[in-house]
Image 1 (spheres, rainbow, N blue to C red):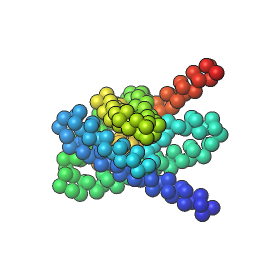
Image 2: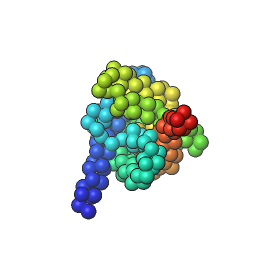
Image 3: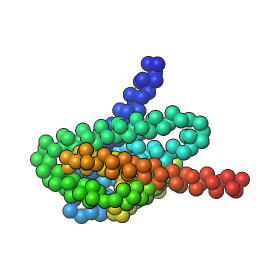
Length: 219
């Protein structure tokens, strides 16, 4: 029992760490006048997460289908715990940054970002979340599998995955948590974030599903 509680706590704390990293990446991105520059600097968040082994929802949910097929339903609870930890981490960063000299600039920038999301349709948010999920799986899975033997490819995958989802306007649920709290729109953003969360899950599992199906057919 104690081991189980400790495991859950560790999972949550590692998720909080990931939320902190996304908050840092989101803040530096918001402060850039050039969108491409902001997208590139946002990658510092994901790189930090991957280097230190933190738990990021969009980096883990792509393995949900495989875990369920392996009859490991507890992974669903792990992903839910990570989502909550990510929310806590992003909220901490957003709340603290609002107290700094950059607070007003960040808040206004976040409000502009959230205005677009809050005025969007549910199906648009869902679809944009799906494509972000695909990009995040590409970035995370490539890094995990290639960073030891092909570090350059792994780093390029991370950078391109993040830059593409930002420049394309795809929706990242954890980044949106940060923007929502920073903008003071947390309550209004709950439903949009949940839709994007679902979209990220669908998108993150699309590539693994295709690979599983084609592998089965070729056997």
